[in-house]
Amino acid sequence: MGETAEGWLIQVTRIVVLVKDIPDLNDIRIDPSTRSPIVEGAKRRLNDLDKRALEAAIRMKEAGGMEVVTVSLGDERTRICVLEALAMGADAAYVIIDPALKGLDAGATSRVLEATIRKAGAFDVIVSGELSLDGMGSQVGPRVAELLGIPQVTYAKELKYEAGKYRAVRDLEDVDEVVEAEPPFLVTVVREINEPRIPSLMNIMKAKRKPTTEWNAEAIGLKADELRASIRVEVYDVKAPEVKRKRVMIKAEKVEDAVAKLVSALDAEGVLEG
Amino acid sequence: MNVKTLIYSENTELSLQLLGKAIQLSGAGVSAVAVTHDQADTLVGSGAAKVYLVKDRSLDALRAGILDVVARESPDLVMVGSTKRGRELAPRVAAALNAGYSGDCFDAQQGEGGFAVKRLAYGGSSIASTIIRGKPAVISVSPRSFQKPEAQGKQGEIIELNTSTPAPRVKVLETRPKKTSDAGLESAKIIVSAGRGFKKREDLKLLEELASELGAKMGCSRPVSADLGWMDQWVGISGKKVAPRLYVACGISGTIQHAAGIRDSQIIVGVNSDEAAGIHELSDYSIVGDIYAVLPALTRALRERAK
Image (cartoon, helix red, strand yellow):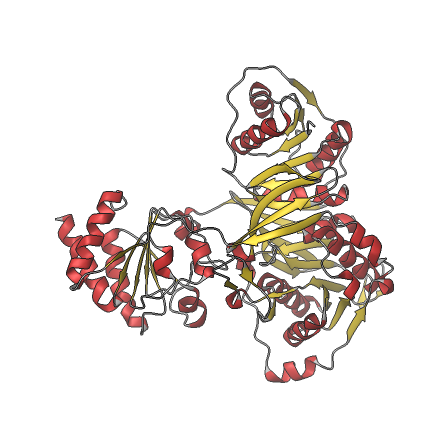
């Protein structure tokens, strides 16, 4: 419990972290005949930047005593991935699992997350990764902020709660921008923000006993068929780009000869000078 | 059918690239949002029919300004330059319009029932061909994807917008210019990079000697940094994307993750003792050989050449 300036007792403030499970990119191979990535069977992991978002939230909780909850849209596999977030230090998880919501685009996904956040209750800050490495759309954070009508602080490489204020350093192209935001707001984080903690065995055990709320579309007041009808963006083909390289394999009995051939080739390319 | 496009980037060079593409898609009917009089003049002089001027560069002001112009012009396609500021603005505009959005596109065509765009997915290892339906479609466009238009000297119209925007809800306390050292690997002309072919940390001195002879910066593959902790920055999907003139991969197997990070290099050299290693496919020149023999010989040969 906390106390406002006017002396009212208030509910503990809450930080919501948007976390997504994605295929482990180290498990994806390119099918040489179709040049398409083989995603089926790849291990599922929490998106790295979402883990960093969670780490930033947990550190704010350690400084300010808030509650940290995660919100995800996913499937059976998400339930398992979210255990890692709970083991890291999230207090509770909300997971939307509904077979009718499979294959939504980022716009419809954002509406699901918005409805979940509204249903889950009042919050101070929403934190998410700036990008998820699978779709690389970089849009769910700003979309959710827009739908909730709250300001956004994007590309945070530092995020702190100190003396009742939230401050962030934004990593822009030309400058670093130091900002202060009044809750409620949404913040997206970049890789430089922190190194996510590795949960202890004891915390992994405890995670299974932390509250996880599972809702379907109906429970958050949405109609699955209407969401499906709102899909605007469809990926119809995914292929690895063709590699256009010379692929000259230099072979020689002696290493000195191979190296000499390489140096003269690089000389001819003009890439050694200057 | 003629499509109507609206373009915006705070970066004038990038806004001209968007204009080039927009003219290709829409002919003369391109609208634009600009943030300075100079930029507005440049866009009008290069073929934009109507340029709306928003003089406040805050996210809220630009969001409101673009929504205002969308209501006036009802474009089929809204193109925003993929700077960091553009990439946070465009999805917000899309959400306000209940529109589809694709980010960091490098190609856009009018397709059946929508706009067909190309963009990277899976950490940059793949290209996702995507269709955006509904009006408008909103996209952000990576720099250097499209050509600027020929200078036309044609006179369009400049309209100053006075869209009301709420008071800013995020207070900017300070802006600090970036240190140039932050650039590091991304701006290096030559990079030599270490993979798991190095058996011990001390052996990296072979790489250091080669780097010093070439005037190169040093990088590594993900396991050398993330698993072994021998170096700070790795090259690849989750690490740094590099575009040097010369990239020398030493003892690196060449996973798709690494490939995506080095794709924009001008010349790639691979050294790996395994003839089947993927790095040979990714290289312009490769030597099948042991880095412990090849690197010292290469350093010596370069030293000889310098004499």
